[in-house]
Length: 138
Image (tube, rainbow, N blue to C red; front, side, top):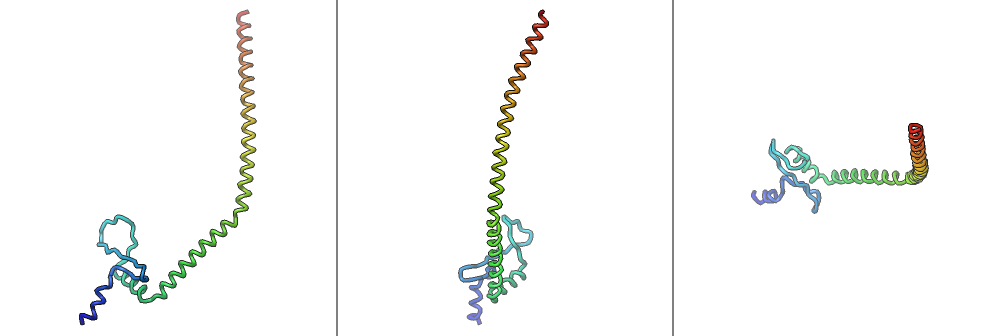
């Protein structure tokens, strides 16, 4: 009878064997324990159900892998769809660059006008001051 139970000793209760190279390792935690990182938790019963369904029903893994593949295919399609919008974005970038150039030219012209007006104001102020002094002293 003990010979029949020896294979059970080599089977880990906290690991789920997906393939010969891939395992999901469970970490038993006590209630109200403090964790150092985020975990996804299962009760003992749920973990046993998950372990038995994965290890005994390989077609379930195929279903999960197919769903993961479909998700990846959808993500790739979204990337291609985004890339197909590039000509519109390039035209937008060109028009924004042109607008920036125009605004910079207008800014430069206004700065020149401002500088001229500053010197005109200083000159008129000097004339007003000198004429005021002339009138007061006369």
